[in-house]
Image 1: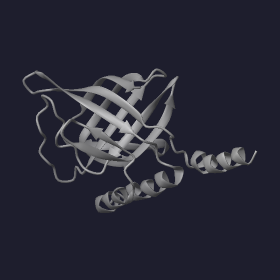
Image 2 (image 1 turned 90 degrees about the vertical axis):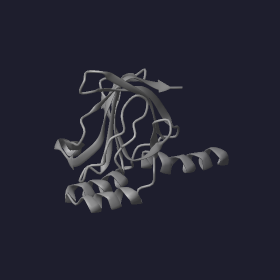
Image 3 (image 1 turned 60 degrees about the horizontal axis):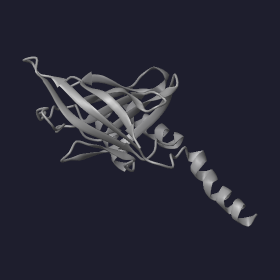
Length: 184
């Protein structure tokens, strides 16, 4: 019985914190239509170790509610990385991630503390834009881990209805994520 009590005592803080006990990895095909109508693609992998705890989310919400980009960037910099977006040559750290139920699946909203200037594949590199300091990633997957998503590689962020983080301005448009699949 002592072993069982010890295991329970070790597990409860993790469960209370909302920590995911295993990484979730998603592969996707990023697609961006060029001004000439050419469909450019790149392979993307999103690896998420866990979502934010309620306390972490509330701290970051306070920073985003301030509207001060420097304060928002500092708060995200102080947040430990909880995953990454892998674009081949470069991994961009995920600092914010929440999961909301959607039907039999879920919607994952993630933020990186810097813009995504390099997407990879056939998608041309992006130029930095003043005031567009973050990358925002959204995945919508069913119970089998399949779905779609989007990336705002240059984004301005704000808190929207129901205390959700949304993109208030897209600096370069949206990159669609197709064939999103949870990897086993």
